[in-house]
Image (cartoon, rainbow, N blue to C red):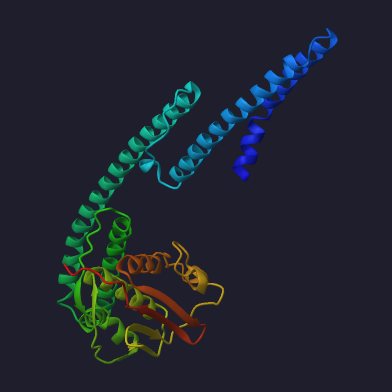
Length: 329
C-alpha cells in the first residue's frame, strides 16, 4: 500500500496534465459548437489505454522496487543484479553505484593489506620481545629472594601484556588460527594455575580446587588465554582470602574470588572494550582490554561468559562450556 501511494504521487502530475489537455479540447469544441462526442470518446479511449499502460508500468516498478529492497539487505560486495534498462537516467545511476562499489572494493583491499602488514609486524615484534623476556627469566632463575620473586612476577606480567597485544590484533583477522579439538578441562586449568603459583604463594591466597573431569571441544591456546586473564584479575583484586575453581551444572566453570568486587553500575559494562570501571580508574593500571578479549574469544569458541559480583564480597566469573557441535580437527 505504501508503494502504491508513492507511485500514485509520482505519476500524479502526468494524470493531471492528461485531464487538463482533455478539458482544453472539450472547452474548445464547446466554444465552437462542435460535437463534444468527437472529444469525449477519444478521451475515454485514451484514458482506458493510459490506465492499462500505468498498470503494466506499476507492476514493473513494483518488481524493481522489491528487487532493490532485497539487494539493500546485502553488503556492497554482494550487490549484484542491478536493473539494466533503456532509461538513460537509471543507467547513469547504475554506473555511479558500480563505480562506488569498485572504489569500496579497492579501499577494503588496501585496508586489509595494511592490517595484515601491521599484524605481521607485531607478530614479529612479539617473538623478538620474547627473547629478552626469556633472558630475564633465565637470569632470575638463579636467585631465590623476595626481590627476585617479585621481578619474576613482573616479567610474567610483561609476557601477559605481550600476549594481549597479539590476541587483540589477531581477534578480527581472517586467518585467526583457531584449531578445535577435544581438550581436557582439568589440564588447561592446572596449566593456567601453575603460571600464577608464585602470586598465590606471595599474596598468601588459598586455592580451592578439585580435579575437573570434563572434556570439551575448543581451542586450547585461546581458551587457556581466557583462563589466565580471569585468574590474573582475581589475583590482582584479591588482597586476602581464596580463589576457588569449580564445575557446576555439569558444564559451567566458575572462578570465584573473595576480592574487592565490582560496583553495580560497572557490572553491565565490564566486557566493553576499554572500560575500566571505578576500581580500574582508581588503580590506574587497568587497560579495559582483558575481559573484552575474553568475551570476544569465548564467542568465537562457542562458549558464553558472564559475571556476578558484590563489592567487598567478591566476584564470580561463569564460563558456560556448552556449545554447538564443532568439528574436531
